[in-house]
Amino acid sequence: MSSFDESASWAEVAAGGPPQSEEEARANPVAEVIPTESSVESLVDVDSSVSVVPSDFLEQEVKTETQATRIEFENEAQAAKDAAVEEEAIAHEQEEKEKKKKQEAKSYAENPIVAINAVTVAGLSALLMIGAYKKHQAGALTCKLVGLWTVGLAAFGAADFYVSSYLFKKYPPKSK
Image 1 (cartoon, rainbow, N blue to C red):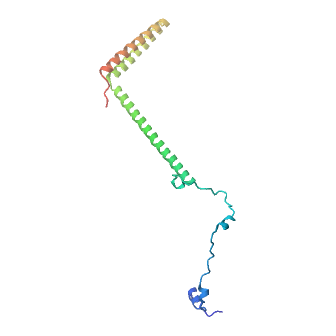
Image 2: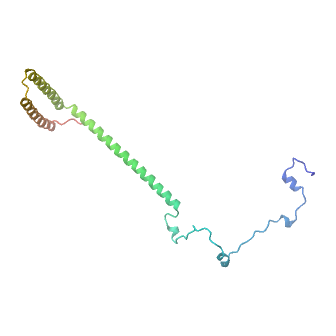
Image 3: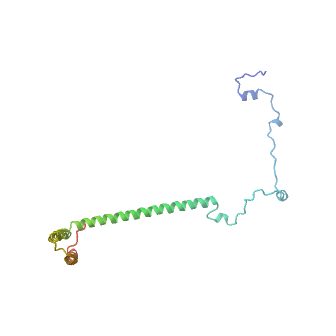
């Protein structure tokens, strides 16, 4: 066995051995290759994917396929972002239109002209139904009578439309 202590480090063990000569302490020489035209001619190109780079390579904006792919993805992402912003703007615009319509409907509902029209139409409908029921009970409800009432109702509707239009122009609904 050796005379070294088992708890000694590698450095202590190496230092305890015989000293090296100057030649042994020197590192191995590195082989040098000096390229010459004749040495390059004999090399065979095994990588067929190697291609020649154009002379304006450094001036090109996109130099690699990876860079082109990245730019394409960035453009697609920007287009998607722009589309989302545009959709959001359209949705906001539609929401504003809906609010405006609701506000307009509310202002019309509060207009007395609309209330008078509603009461008049309801009253006229009730009178026509009661009259038709009484004529039916008496057996005097004919197609000619129903046709006359229909013409009268159409004439009333046309007159009501023109009177209401005039009143709406003269007294427009209040905007809030």
